[in-house]
Length: 319
Image (cartoon, rainbow, N blue to C red):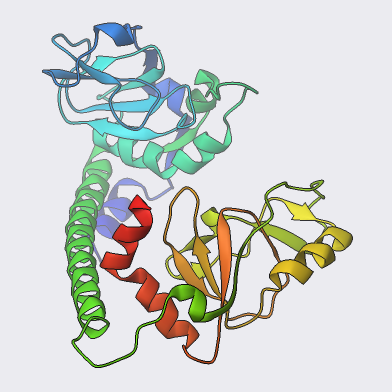
């Protein structure tokens, strides 16, 4: 039996009481501070409706170890733990638990676990917002303080371990990517007596997507519109929010005729991302993507990786 199980058995033999968060916490809002008076660097961060500080100032209105929840903006409902003194802005809720009943850090872990629910409760057609009542009405289990301390200990240890593993994984992925890019460029630039060709001589055709979007159809249509945003991580994301009718697709497909084995290349916005068409799917391309049809002189995969070369990527960005 774990330490936590022992505590629950000893302190909560008949179950745990649930109370509204507003009953065990004081939920307040910050004070507006003009953006023009903030600094890019400073002593105390200004916490508002976003995930990151709005800026920095030289005074504070809240102490460290405080729970904040974004009140307004696209991130409304975002829950954070402030490790240092800060200025709580007008778009920031601040939670102050009744420490005689419930631990501050215990409340943080609970509310953080409900972050998705809070974000789903945003309202307003313009700037999204989160109502104080939504937070106040959350039902939170309130076991004895000894049980809360053990739960906090477990979750804090897990959080620290997760952060360490994430940092290690990010570093490993970065190193692997650099290694991959080095060997890719090395393999594709070796000094060999190989004939060189212009891209146009290696493709049957090179055509971009449609410039003038036609009438947009509801999602029930089977012909999705793909843009540069759908080409990433060397893959094609076929999920779309816009669609065209069959007649428009047939007319446009006669021009681009995208097929398995073609290479898609982004040429607007994020330039240079590429992917090989591997699925026999019907879709419609916007002008931000061009389709390259390799001829018999080059393999699709080889062409794709050549386009990914650092030298070629740099060339596309400046031309």
